[in-house]
Length: 305
Image 1 (tube, rainbow, N blue to C red):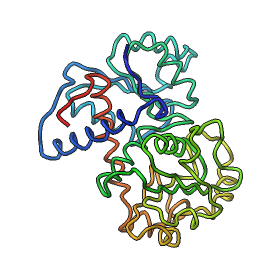
Image 2: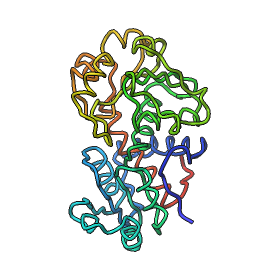
Image 3: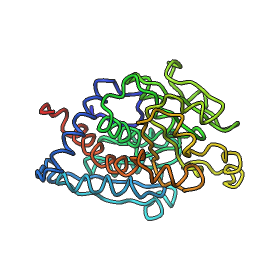
């Protein structure tokens, strides 16, 4: 029975810590110029039903660096456009490749594909979850500050797929998430861990950031939401990560953003382009974490970590 990577709530602390250690090891070896190509003859299918920059490049580059190849499938160029079911697509595609990554809308659509797939399936983003993003973020934190256990991560802005992934991994790895969201844009109680000790709510971004080791946000044009953007931005205007917010955090606090960013909206230029920002390391680490993940799904644990 193959493993999938659909939602962080399905993972154990042991699995996630292994993947983080392995990702850091693979990155180190890659930076040292070591050639490691265990995926010769392996094929990754990438099914995109939403636009992407970093997800596509990181998976495609990662597969190539490991010696495999990848196939890009856009919904508008496949029979999904003509209403072929996602289940039939899974039954066919999974017989021809070794691994599938999907970036889609409803999480149930990802689950329906995975149920019929004969090969491992990776969540490249759904409306409810973005696990690869958050694991790359945690890898970046570990590189800069060491273990994330016991840390405080502050989320500023509306509750979305990235925040839900942060909450699940916080409940697994043992850290706290402080949330400050605009009225009407807070979490959906059905999408959070049972362990509510892993998060707290704050009225203002500054209060949420007090004592934080990491401050993170996302743009106000979140994937999967069709609400009028002008209305959304108007309601979110006070929830900008700026220098005032960062000064409330610990002096050595990091700033992260899953990108794309819109300077002057959810984050000020002074913060995202400032010394506390690690957004480009964070973006790069998507590549290295996903290499470790694909290796794990296809080859199992490699114990030279």
